[in-house]
Image (cartoon, rainbow, N blue to C red; front, side, top):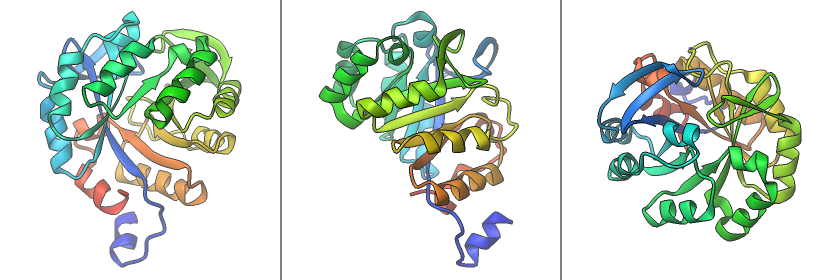
Length: 257
């Protein structure tokens, strides 16, 4: 239905960037359900392969998470990230990034943006210094469940509310936030549109929605939300692509910037 409206030349939706997701564990492309390693599915042994597929289907960006890095507190999949970079896609990467030297190394090797999660909760002044040095190459990842921020690969409750976290990042001048609703991530149940709208109301920063996308209609709903909130920059899509529930070429054609 949504596609038919667009193809008749009437587009009721704002453009949003489509960010295919590649999660890395032991050098492989995997997906987890709700961040649990015990619920891992391996999709590609070589993560460069899906990157090339997403590029050929119209993606400009890819969202990469070093799962081992997130759990261990230090990057673990640099060689796999280099394979992804070889596709020519712009890469934003997170997972285990805790210091400026790691950020400099990622940027030196061609990564476009780095995502800070746990350290942003622990040390906002550190984020202020990063924004001063790296500007819009710094992205803050806010992973939430029941209104509270989760850290260290989603296994710990930070005891910080999403609202307080966002207000702190606003004061620092963060330009981009990735907001993941953990309860929907990897579950293919549809995004939490209420939670995403509440996030968009809290900040003028660009927001990238993550979690739960299972269909073309889910992306259309987010694009419709973007028509009301222009700071909804894009949507991260993982499992729905890997299970072929939605065609990336359809999304980039109809909603891509």
